[in-house]
Image 1 (cartoon, rainbow, N blue to C red):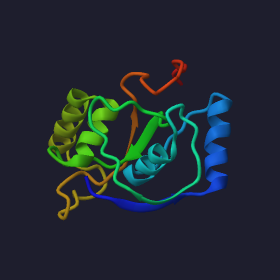
Image 2: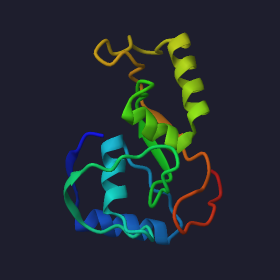
Image 3: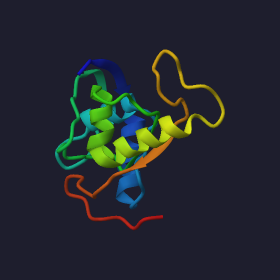
Length: 140
């Protein structure tokens, strides 16, 4: 998977850790943000400040450290980012969602010709609570 540069500032790490300590959910916006906070987290899910490249490759079977939900666009099947969302919400649900989106078409605008996918963002929940050292959380 491609490397991306980014940073998790100390204040952001503290806010993420504080939110989790109070039972809140961590919902990154975009796969880059998700990859950065998962890289910055230790095995117990504590996030530390981080600056640099992340080349974390997330695929089905990955043990989530921090993330509870994800706001992202659809990604093309057979791509590394599709593997990431399939790891998060399950392969079959993501394939079904993609087929539905392609069949139904976009609500507000044409699919991005560059990416050939629906352009609206979507909120994805974890299929199972399989984050490291996490207790199941109550659904909203």
